[in-house]
Image (cartoon, rainbow over all chains, first blue to last red; front, side, top):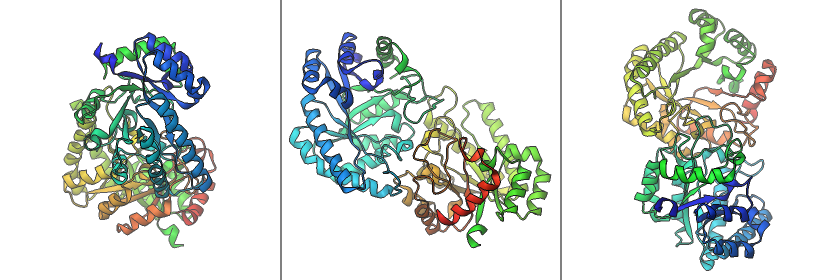
Length: 275
Length: 275
């Protein structure tokens, strides 16, 4: 099953049903040996226990979620965020994660200084890269959909992620995560994926539902929406990407309410038929 | 009151409270002599009656909403859409509207061919431009927020609007509408507004609420959100724009439930203090 060999599931997809322990056991039971881990779930289980379980079940950690959130205007809050990111780097090293999923952070409470928020994020990133390099960890810049610019990420396009990479001029400690949900609409997608090339260290799949009702928690399963997944897969593979396809679905109205074993089975089926 | 002289209100802002007749009378009563008109409300009143009332109250029509929706895959549906747009052109000419607000249309039911939808829209536009020119009407391409790409508009960025204008190489029958809600997040905003230059024929203002709950109907009043309105106003004015600022607020939870006279008063106040 070569298609399943590079399949990973972001545990947020079964976040309401399964703890990290259950997700590791559950995904492995279904022959899925890639997982992206969220820190709240990781801390519940404990890092040493998680490392043992992941190893015991032959799991590859395709991402640790999330690092970043580096847009605070307040100096002390900004330093706290840097310290938190250094803990994320240590955890990613312990899990041997393929990357840290880096979410920029939004425009901070009451501010309208979008340009300033972007500059602060870039500065924070520059400060963290030596730590990531020393730990052998890759920080993957994930552009998030522009509808999340106010609250979650001022890194709104793949073009901006490429520009940040150009400016930071780093080694393998810096990469890019492409999530179809965030970038499918972009008229420059093909060009910017080609430009990203070997920077691409993670590829997240899911779908945009035609009747989307929520800005964060209403993603669809591959095949249920309007994204041309095979086309985007081709773009990232043409750019040289040969890694996992990581399924990441936030879904308050559907997938978080379903039997998680059924969810995993449907993911496996759609990974073959719709991607 | 020079600030009010270039103020316009898109009637959707009081859509739940006022008919077109009431909106014309209401805005004029408050000294606001710009209005953008929606076709459903226009047809309720009738075009000749509307023309008379607009003239009688000294109103400038800053936009007729909406033209476009030209992404149908089905040939007959596409032709129907072209015919409908020709009626919009006639109405815009009758109202002496400064522009038709052109909304591209989404990815049509079940399709995932985003590139094809964009090409069809561009073709349809090319077919309509001679009619617009003959009628002395300007079609204003309005890029809509990427979160509306599936259902409403595949024209997702100002850069793409500029590219379409380059390709169509038209005269004054083609322009661009800049709505802060749709473009504020764009890292290329300043560059693309400058590039648009004299193509800009409409400027729509409102705000992005930090706690936005709906993809279409939850816009904020100027000053209540995270958009740096003075900065974007400066960009469009630096690009040469000297026209109206049109307030366009879809707001199911707030402004559509308020006393419309109060809404207009707050608009006037915010137009001075927050833009």
